[in-house]
Image: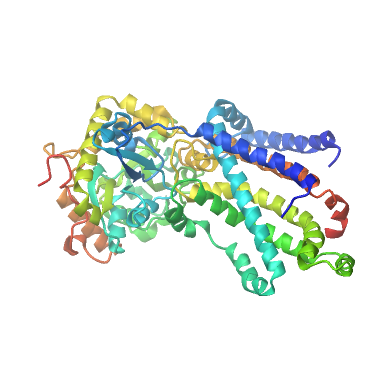
Length: 260
Length: 344
């Protein structure tokens, strides 16, 4: 992690090998570019459609950032409530698991009915998809406080709030942030689902819309180009959050061995 | 809850990222429509991504024909084809562009909706095959596999076409390929597809030199219907006649503009849907023009032929797609009364 540059080379090399094999496969087998375009065609599309992809990326990036923020705040609050209040844990926890089985297409129409055609219904969809890992990891983290620390806080006559603030919360933060990273990884596909399951206005409606439009319009190479942008975006977000995690809870790297 | 100072330091870049994202998206947002401040907002949910079929709508918006009659028209792109009628019935939009069969199904489900005009006068849905499948007539589909988008009334259309060609429908295997109609043909998984449009997928394939065989379903024994219709709630037809009449008059002016200058209309579509190709849109607009005006030349743009609606409704009933024949089920599913020159 700390040796930044040395860690960029292996994935880059693997990507090159993968793209090379893909290119050779498509060339040798003569695969129809409408079914599976060659990597060079994908990169050519990125180059030729930079403006279009950028405009759509800006929309998707905004959805991911805000949708994920909603998931983090909502998921963390729910985890704390579940942790502090046993009836809540009993009543709500099974339903949060069940909520992950709800196909978004089923609830898309009422979301749009309540909140219209703007960005908010999309944020709700992303948050619904992302909040689950945050809840689960945070609940586990809150429960996994060092028993000695709990004893120490009791000895010091800490109130329930203080025990939570100085004992459980710092202990749970690394787990919560791990949950956030998982949430982020699914957040990008969440944005795709959100965009393609709710109506939109305006000429640019995000990379998810771009991909479905390209696939139905027989512009397969551009759908791959947009997918490549999503792929890189997910990676960048993931590592950005990893860096944020190290700053937010510097103690997590030492504790990592215990948690995982 | 107070954050520790290190936490605050870390939140700052996150916040900055949020702001950046917000700023980026602001760059993308553009206000295309300039209209009088007094204009009444009027949302129209399209059936699909903006395309050549919507040329008259975008033309009327761009030329200010709607704002001239006091309507501030906003098109909305749906996520799937059943959504427009649902949201219309829920009162979330003022008009939906949908398909005549879809409207009849929705009415059969009890939705109080009515068509006030036809954007396209005949079916666009076609049976499409690629040369490699060696299918040039419906009869040659016997014993083969046909891909559909999984829409019930399109399966019924396929059965009717097969029977009309003397083929037993049970000898033909249907595969639901969703929206992947063309890829299913390219990969050779199906011999033909039903669901693509002769003015869209067929033209795309032609432009890509794939030489498709195209059989519009109304040329294969299925009764003709208006592929795209303008639908409103029945209660709007009772109370908002002035707006609906104004809308259709402005749309008619838009249609004339498209006819006069198809290239300009194609440019408008490309602007509304930047991922669409202007060349394809132009070819599609030109191919669609003969199907946008009624065959009876005395009738206005948007005219819905009562006998054709009756015949198609009866066909849907006999196919078991709807529970009652629309002809005997109370109020008709369409009205021409808001079309220019047709009102009382």
